[in-house]
Image (cartoon, rainbow over all chains, first blue to last red; front, side):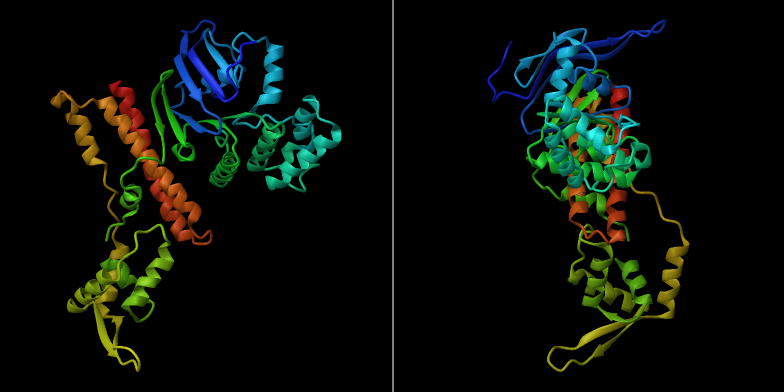
Length: 253
Length: 168
């Protein structure tokens, strides 16, 4: 196994390429040679118009889809040649994923949805229960343990999905348009929670077309037509930090 | 500043400092705070044009304060203000000019300009998020102001994407 020093980046990608070849359709060059490096504790947003290939990129980084070429290291391990089974184990222990449409198991209770990945990772039932209770409490879902996902609002379902993604303390959290099907209140809630977990050291890669969400990150990667066109650290190096705000808030009269 | 002060005086007479506080309470910390000097100058002008009337009130331990009340003409001005529709917010005309003229200079690159502008907007968006987080949750007017600013910025960012699509 090829391991970098543990202090290295949490994720490194080199020359990732993915072309979708729909049957009978023209090939779609979704990811066209992406190099990427994400350090531990970073909160990175990938933003761009729909169809830019940013979801495909996230799928490649989470092993949900395979690149045509390129290399990928996660937590020091080179993973691009991993089998499906090894990816499954890697995701269970190291990568949490949140999707736009929650992807909860609809006939399991909220509690079981969150405990299942903990049990699969080898946690004792008692430990899984304790971790689940703690996370649900933290996410404002105490009392909803026995509900099924269908009984919850979209915002609540996404918080359950977040609990499920975080229950094994992953070194990397991937979020694909996590507020894409939520109203503005649900969106704010998801943002607040992502920011809170980030403050505690969670590494997050967020894919979004929403600039309001993207601006919560410390670093914004603009993705266009399958390629990184800009990679900007926010917050630092502004000569007049409040000048922009004052300008957009100024009312006439 | 003129019309907001006038509108505040419709609900009753007040002195300058009270008006400053009323504006701050209404709009929250998000709105650039009006300075008190600016408010007194504006009140003076409003009085001169007969839209408000001032009266000095004696105070035992401090200098007199001037209390203003709205006049009939002032009331009509406020009503007319609410009656007319409001102009659209400005477009980012200076950036647009830069973008349009960049090819003529031979040095400035349009895509570089777009990327730079996007960084600027994203940083502003971030500052607005921080303002929103720090604002009193119950001040709905202040939150609506910030949200409005964010939606405008979102539109500016969408437009930058369009520019990039066309020009790349």
